[in-house]
Image 1 (cartoon, rainbow, N blue to C red):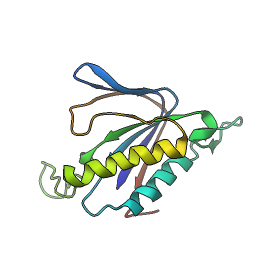
Image 2 (cartoon, one colour; image 1 turned 90 degrees about the horizontal axis):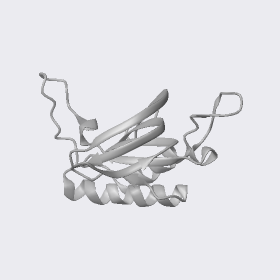
Image 3 (cartoon, helix red, strand yellow; image 1 turned 90 degrees about the vertical axis):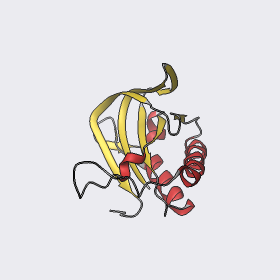
Image 4 (cartoon, rainbow, N blue to C red; image 1 turned 135 degrees about the vertical axis):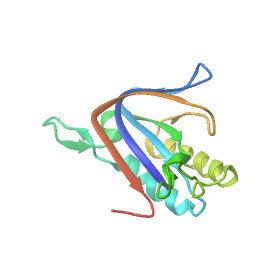
Length: 150
């Protein structure tokens, strides 16, 4: 699994002119799932997202986590995080999980993040043409890969 976390002051997802999810302070999380991902990957990543201390404290240092700032999550499925770009200029997406694998893991991630934060996780619609609007704060953008835990 790969996740791109963007610290935001506001964000929304729109599908066919309708807002499907929106938040103020928190994270936009773009989530990519590949065929080899498991519940273990999901558990580790969810804990990492919720525990990520990238919000400013009273001294302006990145010491606070999502819960410390009453933050929310807008979770967006993003198969293009597994784009293969080595050959040519047209990316391939063969590493991205097919919907029969990706959808259940995406839904479990929504559930897990909701439990860990104690808040309803806002979402897009899996597989839809989504329009994401956000005001990146910082900007702070973090890439997390469960297969490369650095």
